[in-house]
Amino acid sequence: MPWDVQQRRGLWLPQTGWWLDAHGATARSFVSHAHSDHIAAHREIVCTAATARFLRARLSGSRVEHILPFGHTEQLCTGASITLHPAGHVLGSAQCLIAHECHGTLLYTGDFRLRPGVGAEPCATPRADVLVMETTFGLPRYVFPPDAEVFAAVERFCREVLADGATPVLAAYSLGKSQELLLGLAASGLPVMLHPAAFKLTRIYEELGVAFPPYSLFDGTTAAGHVVICPPSSSHAAFLEALPRRRVAAITGWALDRGATYRYQCEAAFPLSDHAGFPDLLAFVDRVQPRLVYTVHGFAREFARTLRARGVEAWALGADNQLDLALGDEQPRSSLP
Image (cartoon, rainbow, N blue to C red; front, side, top):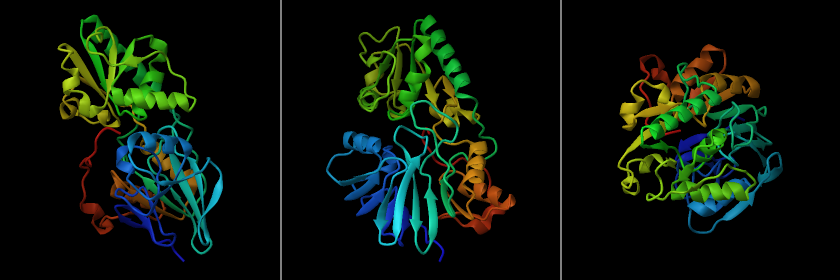
C-alpha cells in the first residue's frame, strides 16, 4: 500500500496519526528543529535532546517530549517505528525515518544541509522507499561557494568597516547561523557582540558541548570596534540606534540572487546557508535511492520536474504538477535561510 502524505499545516501522515513539523498546535508532531517556522504548542512531540532544549527556551508551556538519540529506533504507533538521523541544518536538527509494516519506509528530511557545516552534526543519508524532502534552493543556479570562502569575505567586510570607523552588523538567525558565524570567524580574532536572542541560544550551545571563541552581549555604549551579530528583523531596529555609523550585511543563501542587497536593504550580502544547494539536493536523492520523492518548500515543482527528467518519480506536495511547463523561476517567499 502506498504512503498517504498530506500537506496541510505541515505534513500529515494519517497512517500513523502523527504530523511532521506541523505549523499549528496539534496532538502529536515530529519536530525536526527549533526554528520558529517549525515549532508550535503541540501536546506531544518527538525530537532530539538538543531540539527539546532549544524549544524550552523559545516556546512557553509544557509538552510530552519523546527524546530520541540519533540512530535509536522506537515504536511510533501500532505497526510503525521511527528513527532519527542528523540533518546537518542546526545543532540537533533531525530527519525522521518511519518504517511501517504495510507501507514500507518513509524519510522526511525537514530542513537539511548535505555539505559539511560548523556547529551541526553531519547530515546522514539513510535509504528509504519514499523521500519527502525540502527543496528551498531547488534551481541549478543555487550552487554555494565553500564556506571558508564566505567566511573570508565576511571577515574582509568587517575589517574594512571597522577601519572606516563604523560598526559591521551581520544579520543572521539567532539559532544556527549566529553560532556558525562565531565559529567561522574564530580565527580572525575579531571581537564579537551578540544580540540578546543569539546570546541566549549560544549559551545553550555551550551547555550542549559546543565551544566558541570569546564573545559578549551587545552593549551599545561599548560596541565601537566590535562586530555585531543580530537577527535579520533587528538589523535596523531600535536597539541598534546607539550605532549611528553602521553597515549591515545579510548572511543568507539568497545572496546568490542579483539585487540581494536591495532586497534586504543592506550594504552587502554573503551566501552562507544552512540549507542544501542544488547539487546537494541531487546528491541526496542519489544516496537515499527512493522509488518516489515528494518535494516541499521553495522550488518544489521545479526540482520535482528535474528529478522526473532524471528518471525519478517525483511530485511537489500541495502543488498543481500538471502546470510545470507554464511555470517560471520566480523566487518563493522566504526570509534568510
